[in-house]
Image (cartoon, rainbow, N blue to C red; front, side, top):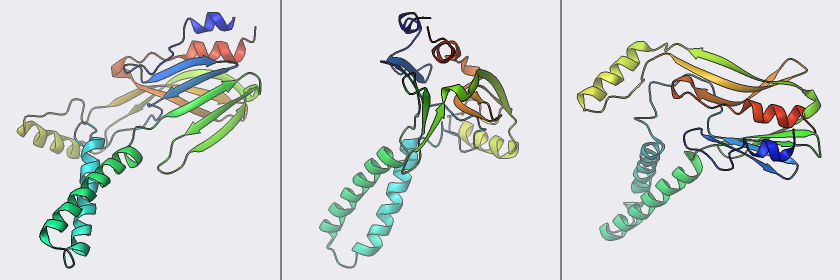
Length: 215
């Protein structure tokens, strides 16, 4: 299949519903996604503990520490101004660098006959390079997780309901559709994991055609 034919099936920008983008850049096919881990959720559900909420909690903790150090030496107006600045800076910094949305990137390159996988980390990225010849298949699979701490999830849900903000799906069984690169040594690299309930559109065909169709 030609590059032009593959392009017609490729989404050039991050689709908020699909949570991924895939596009051709010269001899490379670039795949990026925000959903690349198939793992069970904590009872600290993302609907309750959002990145904004976690950032303000962290910023508040920083302010408390700053107050203990600064209060003996600063007057009340200066102390208030300093703490306000620290709160804003800590919130912005944690939101941008600590709790930021993370992406996995897979760059399939025909010129070098490799795929470069870039995994996000808290402070640095992990990069792995694999020869395309070592990829035996691009496969989809499913992973299912039962909620172990059912009582904890039910308790959180009960509190949420009392406050008029029930958390959808909390404590329920979770199932994911995964997209993996399977290698000659028997290992695999998961590059996408979509929740079954969201009926994910998995770009398996586009990646298969790019790797195994060189015409």
